[in-house]
Length: 273
Image: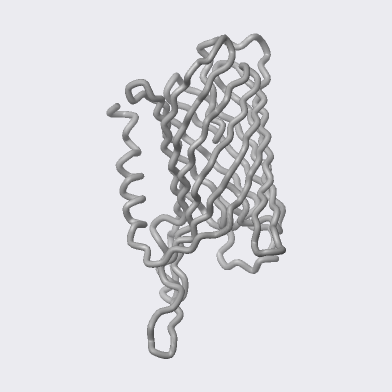
């Protein structure tokens, strides 16, 4: 595990830097169903497309809906290493309903580097990604909408065969995202080291080599630093370092298309691409 643990220490460091937040706000639960299609290419390579919708209740009588189209390609150098390109598209009014709830940008190209290894009987995955979120609409009047983002995800998974074609794939994943900050004006608030975090648990149900259904739950956190607000006595009543936590439920349905009958040794991508 010397090579496969190379990203573990940075992830633990980033996570620990968020622990000193002073305020915690819990947002309403979001529901995200997604349909995915994968085209198996030569070797273990894949083309992928996915579409999801986001539903979240805001108040007693109001809800919001968003949607995201995800496209991707992944090429495997060997059994452990792969790289690829991604593109995420949202409508202008659906900004902040992408992979990380609260992140602005509705056209987001990116690159990824993935490593797969073993910890005992568990499959250990690491995914490092860089993205550039572009806002093509000023409808939300969000400052600094076009931003680069670095993402790091760690996951553990194990497969339990239940028959010739059916298998269960329980998986636990943790991901952090941080905006790239090359310059900041002296008058700007000092931002957090980590901007987003997501802890996700799922149980993939492999019905056949062509069909997977995966229910999942997650807790997403947006790490913010707002302008402090004080009462008449000078006591801070809001603002400052604030964590906004959103419970999320999801259901992914994936359909994989092969040119020929798939080999039992062919590597399968995680549902959470």
